[in-house]
Image 1 (cartoon, rainbow over the protein chains, first blue to last red):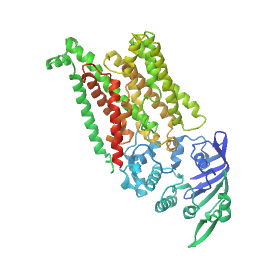
Image 2: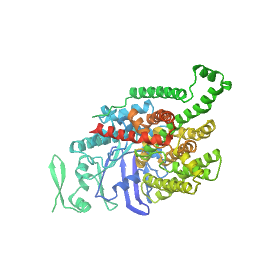
Image 3: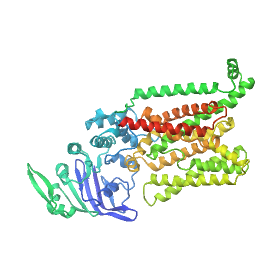
Image 4: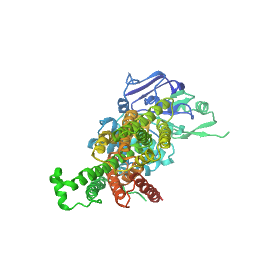
Length: 256
Length: 339
């Protein structure tokens, strides 16, 4: 599986938000999108998922342009993990994960035994099978994020697109989610995720795309992109990149 | 305090109880009435309906259509209410929110003003209800082409269309002859099943069943839609198609109901909440449960409308009088459960 974005321009109405964006994602890779608010991360996501049409450029999977693909085919290729949210009705966790089977089920049908088995396997893989009967609305933020990840797994797509999967989570839950992201990529999934923390990109990204004002400022491995010069240029705030030993690096923001 | 999870076994039990309640209530509603039928008369009606005399007329021409109408109207209204709440991701959504009631009410008022017969009034009411919803839908679609949350736009346009329809109803009432047609309009709109007969039922049953079928067939997909457009699309579901089918289906149901029974309020709003407490939020079980609860509810309220006072109470008013405190009770219960 190889996802390829070439020279894409996209936006809302007539206004383009991202320009000339090109990137590639292969199986087993974690591509981290980093950049300040309004730099076009979400727009890029929506374009890749087929929610908005690119004004220029192409997106292809294994060399085939996905511009004319039907929703169902897109959903079988790419799974979307939105930020954990609260739906208005108290669905059970099992029912939330089963929604992923919509694309594998007839219009008038509902999921069967096999779908249920797939949903439960996804929950088990993320270690949250015991939550299957709980109400999604009463879970903690971290658990909810894992449920949405399980849903994307049950979709059986090879590319996972994660929108700030660590937002609003406490420290331990952030690491829990990142650990699962790494595991999934080593199992062969291609993962594309956004985050606001450069440190998280160090922890789990195989490649980092640094975005600013709708363009990609730099794209390479975390060592090359997450440098003081590039990060300061992207975020326009002073910071320092510190070696923390054992090959780890952290970004220290400064007020002056 | 954790609310009880709705396990499969519990849901099956609830359905068995609801079916039993519906059967018992149907039979009781057929037995109950001013005119008491002796047991022998029942056998005669069942075995030889053609020459069962007065008992046959009371049972087959008066009570049976009324009971079937209450059952169908209560069930269909609740199913379309549950579908709308899922579709609009809004627990305050009700089947009349896109102007179906107001449009049908205006159609009926116009028919009465023009001096049409009963069939003419019913047809105009039905057309009025459908037109209002299609108008709201097409207006909202053309506005949301310029961006914005399509569901929010649809809700706002629905409010506008509903208000416009109600203004036209008030205009019809204003110009109507106060000693004749004004009373007829008021009587029609207030809602009730007292005058219902076989023909009315046959007239409304077709659109009601035609509307009910797609709602029940698409019910599992409503789960996906209630997570919002973007997620539905990313899950491979086309929200526009399903939304249009559901809105047209619900409009047919509401318009048909107003055309034979006037504006029966609150059932479509309250019953889905009650059903959700019994079987959970999954629309696969919620919609059938809503039908059964709604049927039972309207049968019961209609029996009260018939028998509480010497003068028959209008059903539409009674459903509101029962529905409002009941809704408040549900709100208290839910909040207290969380505290």
